[in-house]
Length: 117
Image 1 (tube, rainbow, N blue to C red):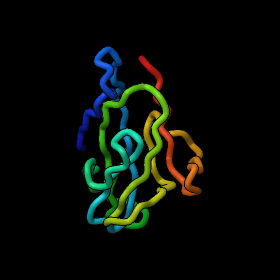
Image 2: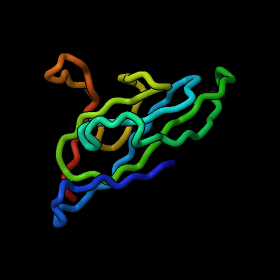
Image 3: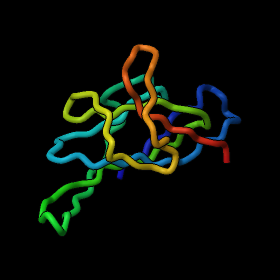
């Protein structure tokens, strides 16, 4: 699993909150996450891959995961899978909202809602 600390926007007093973003993607060579928390830089935050076997299907699939330290607030994000921007319905994490949002440019994005601890 990869870990990244995102700057708190110059506010040294603002406490960062640990959050996890995970997803399952079949046959991916690389998965990144980008969003408002890193100015949508597509190759800055890679997810780490952990293989797992799906017993009923006998297939190897993996869980892609990253741990982030983010400031409280709402953060939009998307995945980049093998260079392609994607919304993945099979994603999970303690701060991910169930429904995607529509951005001002008309595209969809996942949303994190992080409360100060």
